[in-house]
Length: 495
Image 1 (tube, rainbow, N blue to C red):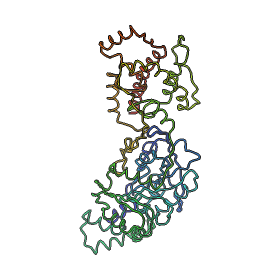
Image 2: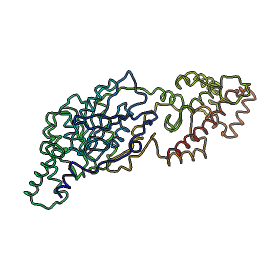
Image 3: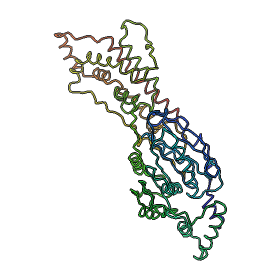
Image 4: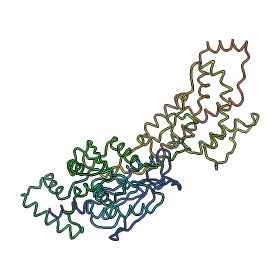
């Protein structure tokens, strides 16, 4: 039984996984923006090879350094535990670095030390990031053993911008004594103390550290890094009072959050929101505007369809080509859209075809005022990146939920049902071009209004619909069908 307890401390179940299956793909998208996973190896002070991954924007801006958060996993965790951190932080222009500590995951080593040697592994990662000129501030996010590792290292490196410590224990000896009661090991107190002393000697020989020296309460009073503590109320493995003790003795700016759940349960959304806000404040990421997406969404009212979530850039070039055809000769018999150069950005091309909408508006202004009356065009607003809507949770307790993912969004069922409803009622689905849809609605007006308008037309001759308007109306219908079919195909293909 003592040997089992020793393995419980220094040799817990080890994660054996396939990085291409359980980590984010080497090239993936979040909220319509491209990112990449960069795998690398580092050597620690003991000569062990550490398997690491760095999640970055693709491409990485050359003239603007970005902050980075190093995610530190638990005693039986691995790099895959950082999937949730990538979802939360990448849309805020914060890169995420994660590693398998020595003795964990795919890295070298036979034993873990619950933070003692892991803090040296963390030091190697920080040194590597400091040498990268494209990385600015550095933050730490640790859970369980990773939280202890972050706190022990933070006491030695005050240059860390901020830390999130989830479920840290105050000191290892007290934790071991509590676990005896939790698992109802019926032994006299003096026998338990003797067993702990025996374990201390065995662990010292195997894992090369003293369990009596692993004490966060000694590091907290001399650490001044801003910190956010988190702990589950029903955690039986590391009870919540451990975080309370560290919080009380911590010297720097601090805050603590308590939430429902146990040690390995997924964290609630408000906790992830708090973490995102905390790192945004301490790391101060630069505001890199996504000009491509913003310009598109300002120019087109795409409704619930966000640029990048279900449509590709080639489709947008096709739309732009159709808009450009409005300026071509109306007598041309060719129905194929004119070719355009894809070397120019979509935003630049949109700025070139913007006068088309102005011409079309002038043609239809009279009809719109007479038919629609007080109806006004809807205001187009900038879309946010939607990081909270597209968050997904991956936990170390449920490795089947790590999963591969190349893009995030709404559920396939919801989107499929939306598309089916759109096929039944095409006039209520998309509004990529606001004015042509209004003209469609105008056709469904009552016969009385048409009679009144015909009487007015007898006295005042109406302007005939131009060829440009008819062509633009046909293009609008074709675009709606094209977008719906492509989005539906992509969603079902990804599932």
